[in-house]
Every structure is written in structure tokens, then in C-alpha cells.
Image (cartoon, rainbow, N blue to C red):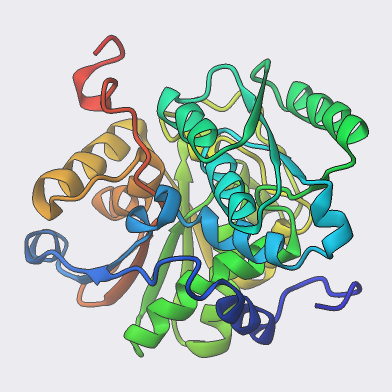
Length: 323
């Protein structure tokens, strides 16, 4: 990828697919007649909850780690993350035999803290603010010389995340709508690049919690508006768009919708009960948008990326905050 590139190209995403082949799963697409009947549409769920490390994040992390020159790789990599990117970067780094330093907020989900450590990360805890995360990461990089691999605001990571959509559109040549959850925007940006190139007639939509609606506001106002004090159970979607992901989302995404917390819980439970698979709250947000009828999909074929399945089984949202 050219150093002057602002958007990864379809060729970049194709190269990423070859780079990560055999190192990530080619995840299945599954359906639910029950959910289709309720919504009056044909839904196709791309199951990144079945992915290695439990989320799509391994795609971008692997693509980035595999592009490091040997000298840089020897000093390791570093990032800050609330969880899924932490585990993904740790796993991708272990596969290359290098160390991953990961800054995580103290209030990260326990299952995600444990996963990062299990995959071999050097986990450094910090206060749960963006300023604390960035300051701690700068200190780590100064001490170790590690290369920063941002969770989403990195062209290599964005290209890697786009490989999920590449697989989806290989399996399904026609989709009227493609929906992703959006937090920092890496998955949405990568997906949008693929959709625009391979299925230009498809409507590209992103969904996010109303309590963390920076992407929706940024998209509407055509300027980057950071999230302030996000409040949502979808912990993977509490981050703001980056200066690299925002222009792609601004230019390539047709619509961003927001959903209420009750709908996220309802959608998550529906997927668990009817599809018999585990997804985390962030992954349920696109289905929540359809349940709230935030867009009309009647009679349409809809692709949905189920972004991950890393959930704390001791604190399921339908059991209440003290479960």
C-alpha cells in the first residue's frame, strides 16, 4: 500500500486476504427462518463470532503484523484496546514470535482481559479514559520501541477487516443491504470499500448505540465529532471514529442509524435463542436496528456482520447489572 494512500483499495484488501489465509478462519454465513419471518426479509449473518480470538479483529491485526519488517517486528508491537483488538494483536504477534504490549482500561470486560493475557499479551492497565489510554501507550512505546498498531485507525488494519466482506460477497453475489456495527470504524470502512467495489447497488449501512452516537453525528454533519462519555452495554462500540476511518465512512457509507439499549439486549437474546450462537452486545446492534425498523428491509436480502462473541457469561445483560 502506498504511503500516500488515504483509502485502501480492493487490491489492498485482496492482498490482505492472501496474507491472512490460513491464519484466520473463513467464517460461515448462516440464516434464521424465524428471524426472516419476523422481519419480512432474508438475512445473512457473517459469523465473525466464530473467528479466531472470537471476533473480526484478528483479520486486521494479522494483516498489520505480517507486514512488519523484521527489525521492527523484533521490538514488538503495542496498542490500546478495550478487549477484542488486544486479544487479536496478542494472537497475531504470538504467531509471528514477537511480543505484544497491550494497554487496557481497568473496567474492560473480565473475559476480554483474560483473553489478552491468555494469548500472551503484556497487559498494562490504565484508567478508563482515552487520554489515559493514549498516555500509557506513549510511555510503553518510549520504553520498548514497539510499533503501534492502532485498533482501527490504521490502513493495514482497515484492509484486513475488509476481508470479511470479501468473503461475504463471494458467498452471496447479491445483497440489497449490508450492515455492520460501528465503533472506531475499521470494520465499517473496510466493508464499505468492498461493497462499493463489488456490489455498488447495495446500500451500505452502519449501526451504533444511541448512547455512543458519534459516527451517526459525524456522518450527518460531515465532520469528525468525538464521542463524549459513551454509555452503552456494547463495549466494543464506545470508541470514536479516527481521522483515517471517518473520511471512508463519510464518503462510502449511505446511512448510519442508532439503536436503544433495550433493543440491543433483545437482539442479542434473539440470536442466542433462535440461532443457538453466542454473540456479544456489539454484534447484536445491526439486528437491533432492524427490530427498531430504523430502515426498511422488507423483501430485501440483507448481509449482517456479527462482529464477535466475547461476552462475560457471568454478567449477561438480560439478567440485570448484578447478575
